[in-house]
Length: 204
Image (cartoon, rainbow, N blue to C red; front, side):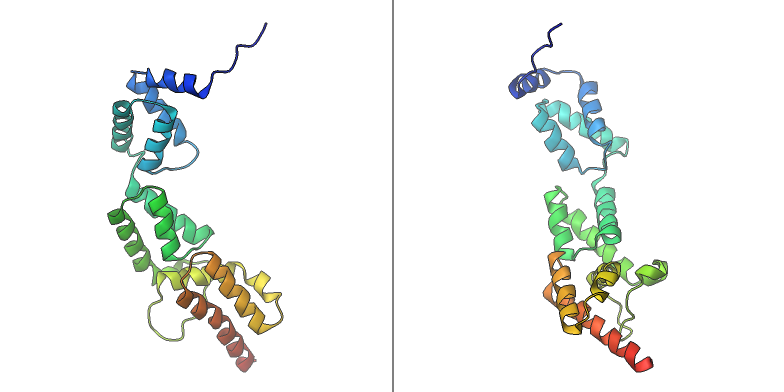
């Protein structure tokens, strides 16, 4: 039995544009959320690209929001927490990512404020292997400073293989810069490697 020819993108889009059952669009949106949490803008873009009618798209988004499956504030907080845990990045980079995901400016600002508030309490909740180098004074660390310390701690073994201390600091600086940290944070965090090494030598 011959297989039916595959429908073109235009044909599939036309079929979806003809859909008038809200449940069909709701289920399409729910399937999109199965892989990972999404922002409202991501879901809207996906459904629009699929060709569904705008009124049905907005209805599906409203229903998913009511069910708690779409929540930009929770999504932004989870995105930043996941980044800080698994792939620390600077605040400017996080802000850009959230903007690209369609998060509004007010939600981004609130999310980054919460990140700043959490920075001072990060040490006590962090596994020993990820502990940052101790601060030089009692000034609470900035969230970017904490994130930079996390990133360097995660790559400590790789950096430790670089025998030349100056080159090691340069590698640390470059790693931080690639991950969206501002020049001052890169400079301070990479310099802290040398200060800690000096402290270890003095105590030895």
